[in-house]
Image 1 (cartoon, rainbow, N blue to C red):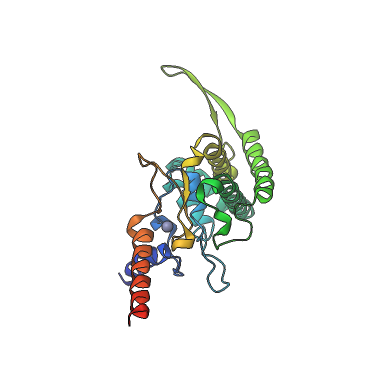
Image 2: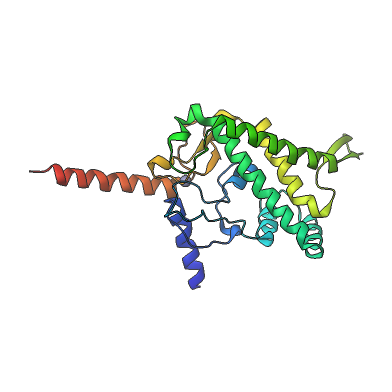
Length: 251
Ligand SMILES: [Zn+2]
């Protein structure tokens, strides 16, 4: 019970970029609107905290397995197959986790560079030296392409003789590589098919958490990943600052 309360507290704390308490990846809010954007949000983003590394919700291979199933990139039977392959070959499991983290950071760089003009200058936000940097994004694209080519080489074409019949491209035929391959597929999908001008970053400079999300509001006015967390935290902070300024300015 105590741990549940602490976890709930830390979800809100992370909204204000100050949370340091470990959270289970299955409690992480899914705000991205696309699994690949939610992948980017599995690392604490935003302002650096006392030089400490950001908290990584994909803390181990088990967390990665549970997260991938939760966001629907693999089904239950596939999770069983991937889990068994990783138990049989721990080195492959660790390589899979490293590959996913690599895809995640590459995707973050590319998306930030892609949305920078609409974002009002993501590079000006605290949180990382290379954010919004087109050179870093170009290198990240090369890395993402390598990950995706490997996944595509392991993919198969399957004839589905349903009504109507169709040929499907299925990624993740090698159990030990199932999870990184599906994630490489999702990363390519968001870059190629998502409405990038609608991808936003929860504004770090205004107290937001730096997570990415697809703005699916009708008028494209969504600013915060979660109004109930980051938006409210930032509003409360601005109100406190205004009151403090008013007190200082009072005769
Ligand atoms: Zn946020």
